[in-house]
Image (tube, rainbow, N blue to C red; front, side):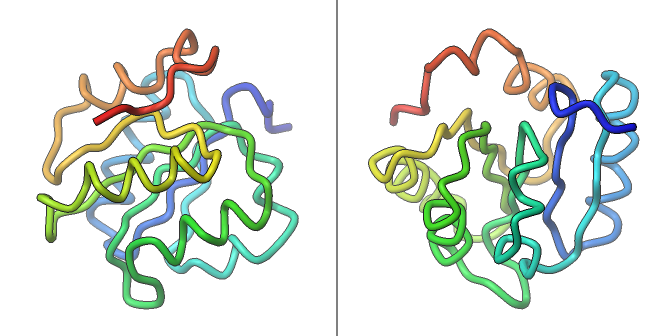
Length: 133
C-alpha cells in the first residue's frame, strides 16, 4: 500500500527521464508513480501524492497549463519543476506557481544529478519554504 508521505507523481513524456527518476526515487525510499501525460491532473488521484515532479514541456501540456491544473485541483503537496527546454523561463514559471499558492520546492534543468533531486525532496522544505527566485 502506498504511503502518502512518500508518494511521488512523476509526470514526464520521456521514458528515459521517467526510468531515471523512478530508479532514483526508489533508491531514496520514495514510492514513485510514473505517468506520461497530464490527464491525471484532471482527476482526484492527484491528491493521493505528497509530491509532483512535473516536466513543463510535454506533448500534451505546455508551461503553466499543468500548473493551472494543479492550482484548480487545490493541490497541497510539493511541486518540483523540471525541463530541458527554455530553461531560462524556469524561475518565472516557478514564481507564477508560488504566487498562485503552490508549494514550489524548486526547479531542475535536465539532465540533473540525483543529489539535486534529493535536496529538493528534503521533508523540511514541506514546512513552507516555497521557491523564491
